[in-house]
Image (tube, rainbow, N blue to C red; front, top):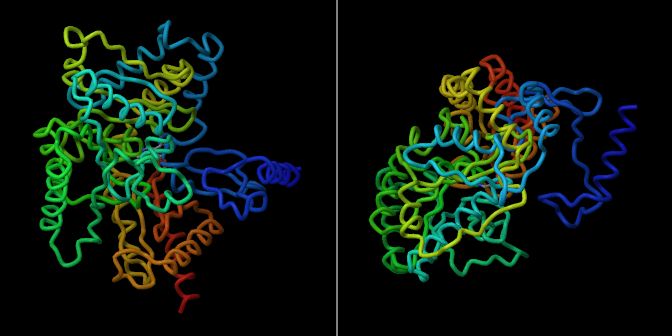
Length: 454
Ligand code: PLP
């Protein structure tokens, strides 16, 4: 029976679904593993095979699977009031959630705009930066500065901000108002110290502002850790120095916490507590509902809003919204998720696990084929390279890593394949023993694939 159902699912996917990363030569041919259910940190595939969910879905399943509290909140809200127009009507879940998130964000980031996910959150933050400057009478101040290796989503505007250049071919990327800075990847420092590398990155930003003119730049958009671009952790002090430059030039600092928010880095948000800055805007999604239903949003500084509201509004209307802004079922799910995280101390737990997780990953560096490991909180990676002295992996390294990912899968661990990286960002409820299980599988997979490569 299970086999038949799985076969049916595979056939329907092959025939009818366009995947988010679809190799077009294989349209209608390739299959994906079919999952049937999930519990805790585990997902189950065909025939009941249990797999550790190493990437927590897509960096989102913070509290793990099968959480009755969230499911009950969703069911209750769907029964009593599944929808209300955000343009005309208020509901208790959205109101309570906005107040709750405002209590978790740093500084005065107390005004929340809800969206449908991460891309729409970043898109709305960028559109806000346009609106902000138009109301301030500075229509030329519109440029957005981003980094190579950054990732911010898949709307036309956020895709244009993607510094993962592999995503560019065959799409029309509307980059006339986007400018790129170097990736803050310490592997690119060459023989410079981390301090010198940071000085150079700062100088590049200052030079770019000088060249473009600060009066043309609206926003600097940055992930605290460049997640999809390769779990890149900028040199110490990077964010604070970039924030100071933004302040000097009246450039909005938008911190994209779609991955790092809601406990991923051991704090509710990483910007202030991990990286020491209070940005002007924080975008969030993913962990806000632990992936149970889609929701995203942004938190905006009151000081920023004061410049364009009330007496300063100049008759303006902020007209940017979605049918599913403030969606009551999604907001109820997020509230239940956050309450669960608070009740069970899940963010504290993630912080307590961080050192153990980083050390466990680092223990793999004795294996040939492991160039380095990186981790902050419960997001980390193992960089697998046949020649670890190269700054970045080449196609051979990527093929090598792909084999390691596949072997991990056979051994019971899902790893997010990302070029030459095995990315691990497990559910935040993971225990020390479960971290040991993950690392044992990775050790076996890397050893076996390495041995096969001679
Ligand atoms: N921003 C960051 C940092 C992300 O990693 C992602 C997705 O992975 C997004 C934005 C886009 O979010 P979504 O896929 O929910 O639209």
